[in-house]
Length: 459
Image (tube, one colour):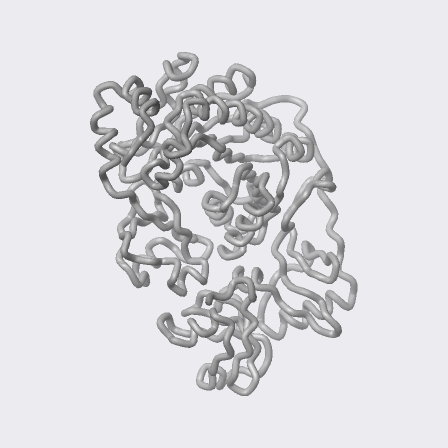
């Protein structure tokens, strides 16, 4: 493929004897990958039910390669949120940020959601995930992917990093910064990026990165960890940005990243020369079956005067709303605690814990949207359906994968279900492929009226 001459000259200077092998990798086909949603299924179980051949990605526990001639996004398991399509190297950052149950986690540059969905899965619906993107349209795409995955403990924002840092100072246990960059590592996957590359782009993005990571450090709590990543080879944006961070924030220190034999170390001379930069990590396309990436894991040393912020109080359900919601859950055999459910503008949300200072931030979604209160009834949402399964809802209709009715359901059509409905009474039902949820339907005498979200329907 055609690559910019200035880029090639610089890479030859950087890589020396490895340059020839690096350039030859551009003649190899790109790799295709999917990452299993561990909120819904284990990687081991997925391998036993997958309808197409996959091969494990050796450095990503829940990642798999698939071949170019397969189209996983057209499968009903994709519609059920069982996996996310993602380039193999891009799976690494979210997998190398240590996540514990109950953590407060920030994905600062989160759209379209590849890393945020993995962070949500690893939180196991505990703690809080704040997922942000400065672009409103991209933030909406981010929310869609989180909803598809069944993530509930989310606060999806559309803000500048500086506005977030004023609301979340010292609040997070973990922060992921997959920084905007010159994208050199994606040239093989996306040749159009190579066509727009210029020699001044690395410096341009390095300046943006400094503002982002400065705000990220401010939001990180004492002892917290930050994973910084890019998909570029440019030293200004990699070791250079980390050197700048360490020089301006002495409370931050580099720590080792979970190893893999083919990862490459950071190169101190590409930064300010400090030996600690070897703890950074490179993914090189000529050494691994993936595109180019850079990662650095940092810890914020214990600091005094940690900011303590009060929690945002929920807007409680009134008695009639609470009764309607409880009646709905009883009818369908669903059990969730109501103490963190709030009502806003006739809609119910299961909300995560957030600091009081978030008031005034522009957000796309706070919590799991459960549904809407209408006159004398409650109507459940698509996002709540995706957070459930047949094991969590006694009023479910499970169709086997490959059943033609699934395709019709996903198109928004009415479907027949006389046999499946024999032991069920009329009313709301969770529609599933196998036991994995797809959405809602309303059963009436063996016929399912389609309640699949209109904007999600296929053509």
